[in-house]
Length: 386
Image (cartoon, rainbow, N blue to C red; front, side):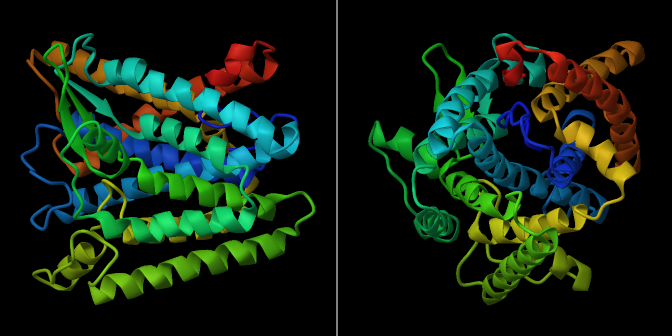
């Protein structure tokens, strides 16, 4: 992600690109591709929970890698907003962009994204997932950018670390129930026309993450020494991981589901890192962003060739997101038609799943590169939203 930020993030083309940010975003998009390949081409495999205690280790680890996608992406979206503010006149400019982009993403989730999952204009279930929660987080950040940085950091930490205090809370009366469900409770609602709506990504913790991403911005100012920034990123990442281990080991607070010993040492480790994502627990955010910050620091020293390859995907993430969803669904339908199979087609094992994801990544990379080149040459205002 960079100064131009991309579609889910502000356009900051006036500034030089920060390749490490784009590269990390690109890596996140590839991990997301693997997980969505699993959802599309591994859905008929009889595993009740890809992170359950009985799940084969390879599938468990495949699903576990996807945990890094949403937290890192939302953090980078906040960082991108700060970069946008620096290039376009301050917090007021960022706020104006954020609320417009946020509304656009919410609309996109309800229409184009939901259609991509089933190719059904009247689905039985509408899902409000990651694009929706990024959009709402941007709407919240549009107001929060006016806070002083210390206040923003304090608020972000309070939300991320404190929201688990409300895990047992439930509101039954309307409209408060709907508001609370959007904020903190994974809920299914009946719709007037007979369909249903599922809030898969409750909002509240993500507001804390995007706020911390914005507060991270000054470390990426032009005048900041790269080595000093890398030390701060690594130190912050290690501190987050240390706090995660402390909270998780005590099993007192930090996650809705305390860990339990597995059948063997590996099983115990896997259950220790099996964290609640919906909504993301304090442990979940600390673990994923702790690793994410360390990787971000290391990506500043990534070989130019590798960084450039990843940065292609990270430079136009919304296009990549939409393109890969439609491509995966179309490929599954085509495979079903070719094999004469009614319903989803599944690959035989996790190795085949990763291989398929690698194959699908190739046309996605070239399509994203072509779109990114077109976007850079275009003066059309609406291209900023694609």
